[in-house]
Length: 134
Image (tube, rainbow, N blue to C red; front, side, top):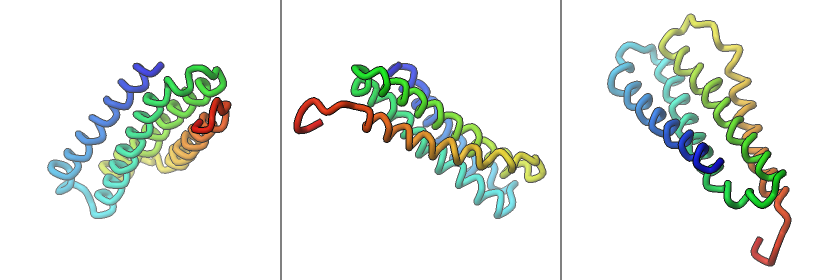
């Protein structure tokens, strides 16, 4: 589980930087001001949630002794990936193709991001304390 989450985080982070650089250096002259703003928002959320995925991968050993925590961690990672695709991915598309008509899906991406963070909190809540520092 940890390995697959870390791989997803690394690929997502790479793509966030690649797409951010492409947007700034190659695509910006071809976008409207609103398109550039949307693209920058997509890039920011993409990069932040790539780090959230990394956090999920790094927390896997912490969650491992608790089956409930493992399930919540997997769901959290899946929610972050869904958010990256539905929020950032669609914003990238709309920034480049304003008439794409995909606006209705963006809120599902935002809800996915929020769900990912709540599920991640659930990982910590579901862990039983084993000592004073837990």
